[in-house]
Image (cartoon, rainbow, N blue to C red; front, top):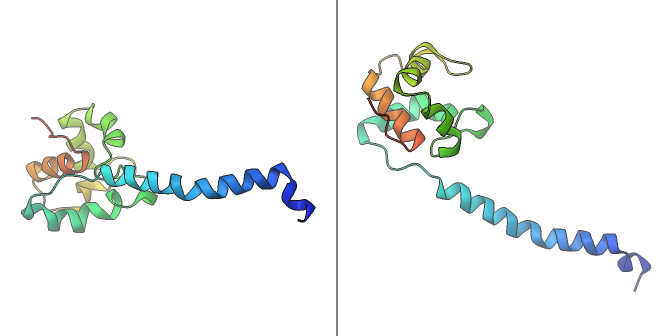
Length: 121
């Protein structure tokens, strides 16, 4: 056997390489468990054209649909503040949430869907 294979660093690298696929599977399972509930049929096309571009894309920086942890601090601000940020824009959120024809109730339902929490009046 070559002397390289007797080194502790090589042994550590091998253990790490064997454990990496296992931890990757656990992360995928955790993300799948946070999937949002079903969206009302009439809101699905609105979500697809106006919300999903950011709220289904981790690279956007927007809280992902179904990620209750990311939505919790926002939900704590209350309905009025969330609707104000949606309608007027806030940080990276475009004004009107990229949905110029949405009603306040549609915005509330979409926020509730993405946050996994009903947006109380």
